[in-house]
Length: 497
Length: 105
Image 1 (cartoon, each protein chain N blue to C red):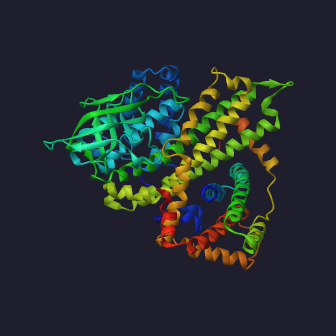
Image 2 (image 1 turned 180 degrees about the vertical axis):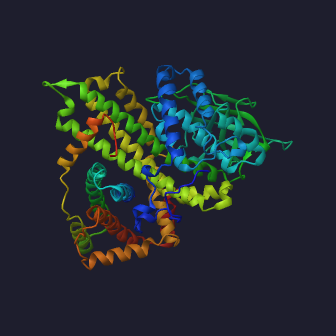
Image 3 (image 1 turned 180 degrees about the horizontal axis):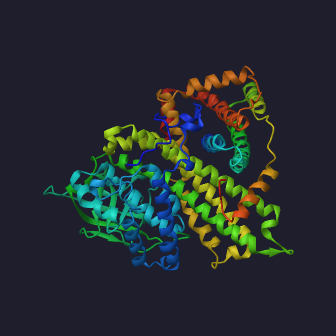
């Protein structure tokens, strides 16, 4: 596994950015990419330019053979197995590499969705929770792209509240199969995937994950959805009608399916954040090219202040998004590197990813909302041409909208951010309350407003001020929360679920 | 809850941008100017958004004297010299348009 030699070995707690000062040396940035990172970035970008982009039209028209071929080619290049251990056919690279690929491959929303679902939520449940037999049987095919994976959690009446699913599982009389009944909705890759991670409740109560092969009796796939965007991906319902799943295909512990369902979403979220930044980089490039050749009132529109403002805001956002995305995965990799020989223990790796759940949700929400700004302003720069299908701005505008919906809606992720932080604060894992008190004491004592001559002193002071501004209402919430009964305090914490 | 989450998100974004720009400035003040410009543009907008969210939360959680004193604290915190965003955006756009793509230095 690649390691981050650019950073000192220190374990930073998830969410601690709110209460602790960081030094520049403690954060990983794109400027710290190793040669290996740069090489894989180049490979992913070349693959996107030479293989994905020329096939966009075919994928937009649901040519699944082309899509499957591209998944296989990505696997051949080693782009699909970065999170899969080497003994199961993968590359087992660091999380920075994972993010780099998600970032650089993001030239077309349809394929990014297919590839993201395959490598992340379609593969990682087996990496993190599979038995030795399950890993040996399924992971080599998934890593190579010969097998395509999918993940089936949502149903027509349960999306964000996934634990309320209706799909049932019952052990057969002979005890060798579970019999599943129900219907799953909005399943990415369903039209051509071979393997599905499906969630169902055993005896109507024990939420459990199953690995289902496409050919299992009683399993079928419904009609393609007609979507606003990401049309170059497949989205269908799954129908489970007395679907017989061998008991050895239960994934993880019975009744603990929620650990699987939610853990892999953290990975999906940090990769989605990186993908949104990559996508923004592409959008700004085409917007710049257009703005530099389109003339109005005798000069190119790139010379107009309001167009320049949009370009500048996009660039500032990309710089910030890159900083957040790679800082987060850098913290994960640093913590994983400190596991030493245990870095191959997937349960330990999983715990580290969980540690940064707040940062993962932040990347997902921020990235998906930033890319919405970028595609919207791209359409504006293109003007009328942005509104027609001939130019990429129109498709990008439609394609990115789903990012605010899948991998947990942005509303759910916002609840996760606050709920997770408060839960950690109340349990003492994150000393948020003493930090609030200390900062508020500083505010009330009227600490000096002077700014030193040190580099970026003014900017750093603004970051500290931002934390104080955020803490000020949090102190009020704390006061209000403490006034409540124990029951209401519990429900405050439980808001995250 | 949404406003608190938004302040948390913006704080992480701001700090990440500032730390990255700082790291670049430690290598070369000259070549990090563009990165610093982008950082300043981002954090200026983020400060406005955080202030607005904080005001909303305070108004929802406090009343009377507590409301007034909390808003006074917020006003004091939000007194800072603004960057010249118009000039910064012009400089960023010039650099990005010249190169034809997003770049850091």
